[in-house]
View 1 (cartoon, rainbow, N blue to C red):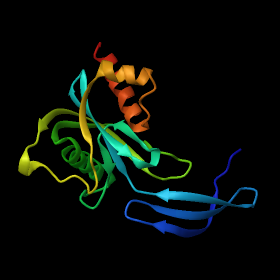
View 2: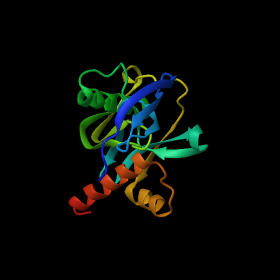
View 3: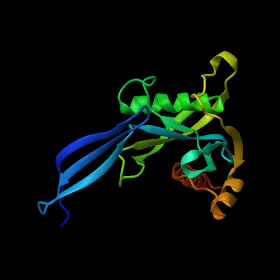
View 4: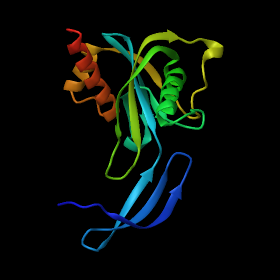
Length: 191
């Protein structure tokens, strides 16, 4: 039977503005010591913004780690601008990210999932939301985008998204989770 690892020691290997890397040593149930490299980033959010039940807004941007353009739901990390407990801060971050990335404010925002992004090396969690009753924001109501953030805002139909999924063109897991939620939502509504 698998047993809990015990903390033995930790060394911070890197600490930057977005994440921290710890080299942790743990004691296994058989007494041996093992190394666990852990990326700590803090909570993040992703939002499926529905224009209507058949159309959603996505962003397409260059992602250097994968050296490609990626179609994604609007998303970002919770930061000092977002206040309250984790749940409240995530809710605030979702509203802020919708403003920064696609220039809308949600009339309704509902969390549909909350989970770890990659449990093998990070404690990072992402809260996923669906946003409806979108209100376009103009001029002074718009928040500045993050420094160095350049993206295309694209409205995609459910049928187009399904074709991309079937062709293996959706390669971002938070966006896949949002697509699956959209599918379930449509099935529940008889579509």
